[in-house]
Image (cartoon, rainbow, N blue to C red; front, side):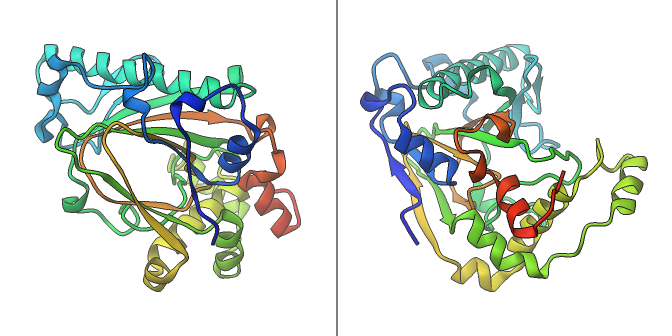
Length: 293
């Protein structure tokens, strides 16, 4: 397996480096080791924000603390002052993430649709979750209730751990290899079932065959313990102050350890990629031999 993590010095970040864009759209992870220390760019918590770095700042009913595209804060505990500070910190990271993407992939530009930006204060190693929700297992992102009909999930992450602890990921094999491995095992799509679960309110819109396949891939990967152990993969610890970027619907990944991370999400139609044939929708359409949306 080729190296799946591409190192980039922030001093070299320009406008649309073709090699970096090709790597990103092939499902690789772009890694910026000096994101938090390079000039005016990058992100670091302000002194007064250090008080937010505690696990009980998260509402225990929520997986993380998020700032939606409209500026609404969700999932936070604490008083009004804490919440205002959280919104400010998360919003500042969002601006830095969008600036980084503007330099990396300028053609995406106005086509990017801002999603949620989150602060994740919990210790990864001690989370108790079902196997489907356990992100310590290799997977590609897909969501049961939110069909997206091929829309991409572009994410920017930064490790803001104050004690020097890395955010440890495993990064697996390329998406097409994953698809070829698991497609023969997947249950076929049933349009009547998609209509039924939409009518019952289980999904927020009609699940396409693409959404069905992506969700099945996510579950098949996570449920196969032999695959989790023996699949082609590399382990990497992202240190505090760095950033990394990937299409999380395409990059096979898992998070194994760490605490305190910020994550920005943007959504993009595959029609606006540099290489339209590199998207999961294009790959699955080619492998299945018919339209999926």
